[in-house]
Length: 295
Image (cartoon, rainbow, N blue to C red; front, side, top):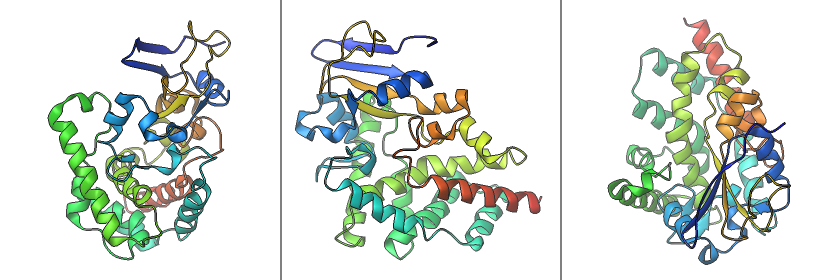
């Protein structure tokens, strides 16, 4: 039995957002066929607040009108090739020397900035074939993460500027055939999420990796947009508006409650799970063993 209904914030002609935390509700809505990824609609057709908010994040390049690969519907002609490229690059894995280096930094209580910069090298150097500069890993942390932050003018403008700097670096340093937003997003994700997970791991050396990263999932939430009018069998008191109603799935809360890694890296199912899932879990497992061996 579902425990509570989703929270809907609906101000006519302004905003229509539905926040979903319950794991079964997330799965029900996501597999209904009545929602899809944000960029199933062309950017100019998306709700105004979506366009405004996401231009300050690592998920959208407003100047070139590019969206992060997981925000694309499977029907998008570029989706499969972009994902295949990432799968190929991720398959090169990491070295044990990189594991040892991160372990040593954690033992030395290195700053978040140092950890983030070094983790960006572990994860993202494979795309550039060289070290990513400190100024790029530094600016990546300022892209906006929460919608509430976008309401603060100084954070919003800083997020927009930081995203533009990140995209400029990617455009001038990646192969022309590589989707710069996908790589740029990944730098930001490592800086803002993966690096913080390192300290969580350090403080939980005796817990299984799956337990740690369902309790402390790196990605807090993912969006979807209505493509059909629906109440989802009465789950909502009024139907959704296609192209207007946006869902925010709180997958980290669902992961913590269910202890299901499919919510850490997706919306409760293995389909279209994060490309870096196995890489992340493997690296954290090796890092945990290294830290335990040196303690």
